[in-house]
Length: 97
Image (cartoon, rainbow, N blue to C red):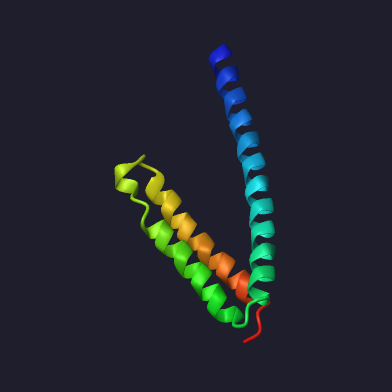
C-alpha cells in the first residue's frame, strides 16, 4: 500500500512541476513575442527582419541532432520547430504588410 501512495505522491509532484514549467514557458513565450514585435517594428523593413529572425531560429533548431542525444530529443526538436511557427504567426500579426 505504501508503494501506491509513493507512486501517487510522485505523480502528483510531477504533474505540479509540469504545470509550473508550462506556466514558465507561457510567460517566456509572451515576453519573447512582445520583445520581437517591438524590435521588428523599429526596423525599416519589419517583414524582412521577422523573416531573418525566424529563418535563423529554424536553422539553429534544424542543426540540433537528436540522434546524437537523448531518445525524446526528436520530440523536443519537432515541438521547437512548431513553436517557431507559432512565434512567427504572433510576430507577423502586428507588423505592417
